[in-house]
Image (tube, rainbow, N blue to C red):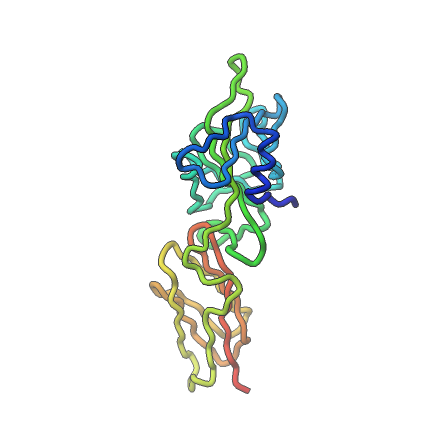
Amino acid sequence: MKKLLLPLLLAAFAVGVSSCSDDKIPGDPEGTVTLNMMDESNGKTMLDDSGIYIDKAQNFVSGDNCVLFALGKVGGLGAVAPKSLVTGASAAAVQAGHGYVAVRPGVLMSFPSGKHAMPIGGQKMNYLKIYVVSPLTEESRTVGAAIRYVTDLPKPYKLPEYGSTVLRIDRSNYDHLEQEVSLSLPAGDVEHVFDDDGYAIECERRGGKLVFRLGDWFSNRFELFLRINDSYTRVYVEADVPL
């Protein structure tokens, strides 16, 4: 699958295809590209190498290349903020004044709440923010849309570093079963998924903490996924098992 290009390359690509003014609008992020996207009946302008185009019915279509999230009416490209990625689709209606996010499907993780999130590390990735400025018309017909777009990276928020160990348990310190150990969570819309790997260790959320209850035997490394808004991290809980 093709990767979305980094902002520098996107800016270079825009020189040959953009026909709108490239004057920066207040609030536009650094690297913003302005593009006249003609629909599939009038030239079929592709949105960079994302595979996104506008069909005859004036919908953004991404096929299998990207998942589209329609964010509704926003105040410009700078206001496109994917804080809650819930309903993704392969097509979305092109509407003036509305914002969209396009993400490669392979990097998205779905959480029990139904919200999706993008990793803050582990692999190089970026995603597209899109804003529809206005429709393009020709002889009273809509033939596409003037858009502004930019690439961005998932925000780390206050999530721990991807791949780090957030809790290390020394089993020799516990002289009885059902011992509890807690991990404080960052503030915000936090959600977790804990992989106990089928061993005797339990994880329960209590307010702003995750509480782990140790059983009589367990593996020495467990995966913990933490999500805040549209970003997630994969970290580890490790247990030092005495010989």
